[in-house]
Structures are given as structure tokens and as C-alpha cells.
Image (cartoon, rainbow, N blue to C red; front, top):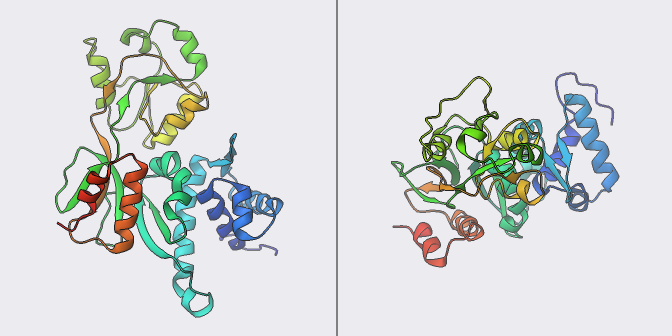
Length: 305
């Protein structure tokens, strides 16, 4: 099909792109869509040419979204959601129940996407809303994942995991530091952080260093951008396991100091204060189980009271 619109992306590529983004694999996307791997690659390349940006980077196993790809994935999901609003009239109903999950782009790309197929299984479809703003659980959103200290009024929340933070860097920068991993040595390099610098302040304060952002330091709002910038050798960041685990396991990032601290904030699974629907309750159980919670904690969060 020839795409002639100057204002719309080639619409026939959006679903292929969304499936590949969700599964993290062109081969898996080809299998689900019933087309060849080459057809998936050609459709993605066509969409990238229209946008003028790269949407995916190849990894040892599959592909991962670039920062531009993450932003476009959110737009593509919204567009496909609108188009699917009339699917009752012309598409056979899928035997899956949809649960709407609001999540930040960094958690989506660094933790959720790799587990999406396992979370959905054969009975659920997770409708992802990628956003930074406070999740409004009254706008049709069933569950949300957000970072903060909690608790929050009007909702129930439980930490997904406890983060132990420590400095990480690209191997080249770690080699430059060598055994000099004290606060003053680390501050000879640019510091990478988001809008909340409390983590770095707490880590450096152990050595009585009062940290204020400097001109050489860089701020990124998405943690996935911090990971990418750190891996490119732009500066030193604080690890946030499990979000930083994949980059460390691949060798893109290495630990530069043994000392670590509990992070002052956590990513929480958030739900309405009232009763959860059955499918939303099941997704909450799967998310908490995947994050390592025991059955008692899962039952307490999922319970009506």
C-alpha cells in the first residue's frame, strides 16, 4: 500500500509496531501477526523513515524501544485504542478481558515489557497508559504504578520492591575511577539524576558531602534515559534495582562502589480504595507475584477491605 498522507503515519504499520514493542521481538511479533520476520522489519523501517527517528535498538535477545520509540508507543496505543472502539461491529470479539494499567515509561521499558506476555497469559489484555502525571483512577484506569513515599489519600498502595541504590557507570568511566570510589572522586565526573536529587544527597552525605547540582551534571526525567546516558559514558548514576538490572547483566553498566543505601522512595502498585474488579484483582496478584511478594501480602492488597 502506498502511503500518501503527509500528516498521518502509515496506519498499517502501527499495529505491527505496537505488537513488536509489547513483545520486545520482531520474531514474536511476526508469529502473532501471522506474517514473516522480514515483513515486520520492513513495516518498522517504513514507519521509522516517515517519523525520521529510530524506534528500536537491537539487543542480544530481541529489540528494545529507544526513548523516541517509548514516546511514540504511547501515542500509537492511544490511536489504536480509539480505532478499536468500534471493533464490535466488524472484528470478532477476542476472548480476553482488558485491564487498564497506568505506568511510567521507565517502568514500562525497563521492567514491564519483558514480563508483559507472562502477565497477560491467555486471559487478560493489559491496556497500557504511559504517562508521568498522577494517575486518575476515576478515568477508567484500574491500576497504576507510581514512584513516591506514600501513602496517598483516596487510594491504596503497596511498594512493589525495595531499592538498594549504589553508583553505576559505563565500564570506561569505572576504569577511570579505578579503586577511587569515594564521594570526592565520584564528583570529579558528571552526576546523572532526575528531578529528585535526594538519593544522591543521601548517598554523598554519608561522607559529609553536601551535594548541589552543578553545571556539568545532567538531569533526565525518565530513568530509562538516565540508564542510556550512563551506558554511553556521559556520567555516573545511581542504580535502581530491578530497573537497572538488565543493563548491568549485559555489561553496559558496572558497579563502581560497594556502599549502598535504601532508596528514599519506592515504586508502588496503586489501586482504588473501593472494590477491584475480578480481572484487575487478578492482574494485581500477578504484578505483585512477579515483584516477589508473598501470598499474604498479595491477599492483603487485593482484598476488598
